[in-house]
Amino acid sequence: MNTSPVNRLILGDNLEILKGMNGETVDLIYLDPPFFSNRNYEVIWGDAGEKRSFEDRWEGGMEHYIGWLKERVEHMHRVLKPTGSIFLHCDWHADAYIRVGILDRIFGINNLVNEISWKRTTNPHNDSRQGAKHFGRITDIIYFYAKDSKVYTFNSQFERYRSDYIAAAYSKSDPDGRRFKASELSAAKPGGDTSYEWHGCLPPIGRYWAYSKENLNEFERNGLIWFSPHGRPYLKRYLDEMPGSSINNFWDNCVFRSRDERIGYPTQKPLALLERIIKCASDEGALVLDPFMGGGTTIAAADKLGRRWLGIDQSPQAVKVTEYRLNRQQNPQGQGDLFA
Image 1 (cartoon, rainbow, N blue to C red):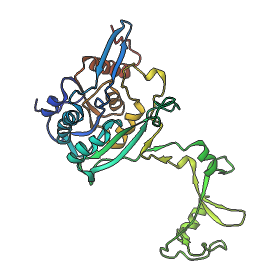
Image 2: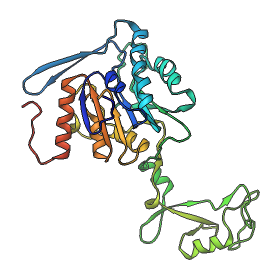
Image 3: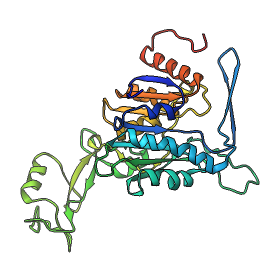
Image 4: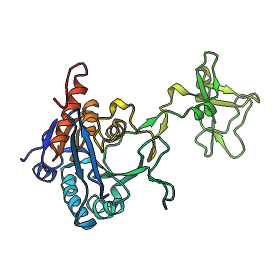
């Protein structure tokens, strides 16, 4: 199969599918491979009570696991466009081995963009128990690598300010109730004519006005200057014009939004998590690949956000679940039964 199909769910071994894909055709890859955790996951599917279980146990040990995954990631690197990126999701069992033994070797350490810590839940519980000799493990790692750190796609993401921050920083308001923050008008370094007196004020000692006199007059004409009780001017920055807080590499609010989002798939990830990844690392119309599709969250998020997509999984159940999710998302008024 010397092609790169789009908007398709493929049942099969992702290694063989990847080998048949054209190089440099994919914009973004997210993979959540089986973790090296020696656990069995079980789930009851539907009213029929069909019991499904799968193992992420690797009898050959860590060396076998890393070799198995590395071969697949090599082909993922090949199919990525130069502007593309990969997000690899793992936990503490093998994260160091995956980074050093796979990602740094294939993508290069200079192309590591972020090591993201994802908090799996907002609830305070964790996996530590009374008497356990470790702190509770409530985060996973997501490695974000660019194929080429000079040209990769990245769209800055923001989240709403916390209510306590708004109360403290945006404590002032205009007569119409519009909230604003009073920002300093001075700067540490001069730039042009910035040491003048304005409204009887000079910049603080050792500082300069950050704007020219013409700009300050323009701000005042537009109602953007606030004067303190002592007569010092400040620039108004309105809350409703701010994009929010820049997102950092600790993600603690990408969780399930409601019970209805859960489909019962044991390793299902929240839509909020995949939406953030897809928005930041791809543009509308881009091709998103998930080679370990599982419960189909990547595919559902990509379709919702106007991206093209390709999902691969060797489990017939995973393909069936994802197809159902897509149908339900694309036809919310339609009737459908995953287990019919």
